[in-house]
Image (cartoon, rainbow, N blue to C red; front, side, top):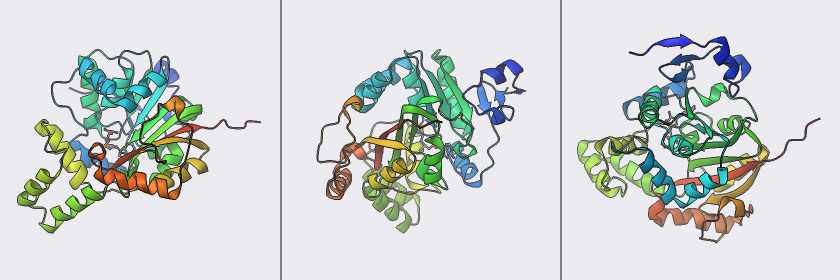
Length: 325
Ligand SMILES: C[S@@+](CC[C@H](N)C(=O)[O-])C[C@H]1O[C@@H](n2cnc3c(N)ncnc32)[C@H](O)[C@@H]1O
């Protein structure tokens, strides 16, 4: 049975990652810090994910298998090594919080997994309990409420989230304040070109009246859904890709502009903004922006890439030092 408790004075004191004026609004509910979600779009999206929390689990994962996923993914493995120990990380829109849990495992880092969908966070919390992962805090909140202390986190990660919000650019402006000077900010968004294949399948689904027949055809066309996955994971992917109420798309240039406007230095992107095809490690990323042609080439290439299913591209930035008086 879940129960809500107001925060004690001591707990309020230790919530240093939450803005002072926001702390007393929160309460604990079964190991999750909770706020009221009031913004209309965020509520709508959170309700949507209540049915099929994303990305969901296969049912057999444990700490070791999550660590393995990181190890086998070149970028995530490099990121985890780059972050090192004794750091503070926030995953904005963590869903079932698999990445937060994987980044926390085997480290003394403090990880904040934040999402407005309570059902998703409960799945993450249960996983943490079962696997004895004690360095992740779960926060049920809306990024637009701006609850996080500015300049607190070494790493801000936000992937697959802003394109499902009412104002992605404003959302970026808010979360880019949460990172420390020289800290990393990593953003994953649907790409205007890279998502074309999914968009075509979405159109087919609609043309066939969103019927079960249409769902069967489109499921056969979607390489992700052809994989050996649990029914829950497939259902989460299906709803996320084909039934989402809010979805927008962006280019590498769009994120470069957001970076420029918010004092964030562009380090690199996946796919790479230049003609280079090898993935550089973060410490070797030099911020080469390429040209319009190289960026177009990279983003069009996503349409033909099997690893870019869903059309998500990643942009990595570093907060510039602020001049303080
Ligand atoms: C597609 S899921 C991505 C989950 C996770 N980041 C991943 O990549 O596996 C999108 C998540 O964004 C969350 N989200 C949507 N609007 C949000 C907001 N305003 N603030 C924070 N998270 C939000 C949703 O609740 C959902 O869990």
